[in-house]
Image (cartoon, rainbow, N blue to C red):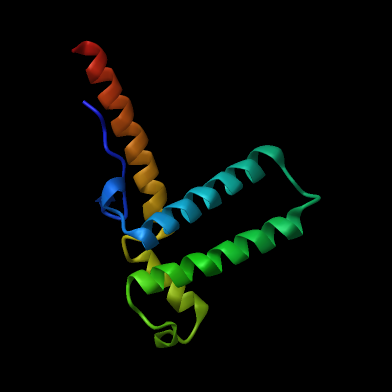
Length: 115
C-alpha cells in the first residue's frame, strides 16, 4: 500500500499546473523558514526578508489566478491574505497537510511492514 500525498484538497497527481507551481513555492518557503530557524542567518536577514516577500507576492498572484479572483476586489493586502487563508490554498492549510501527510505515510509504512 502506497500513501498518496494530498495538498489543496487533491492528490498530487490531480494538481493542475498552477497548483503544482504553488506546491513548489509553499515547499520552498517552508524549507527557507526551517533553515532560518535552524541556522540563525542574521547577516543575510534583509536578503531573507526580501526573498520571502517576493515569493509571497508570487504566491498570492498564483492563488488569485487559481481562484479566478481579480486582485482589485480587495482594498488591502491584508484583506487578500486573510481571504486566501480561508481557502484550500492558505499557507496554514498547507502546513497542516504536510503534518497529515507525514503521519499517514508513517502509518502506511508501519502497516506495510506488518503485511
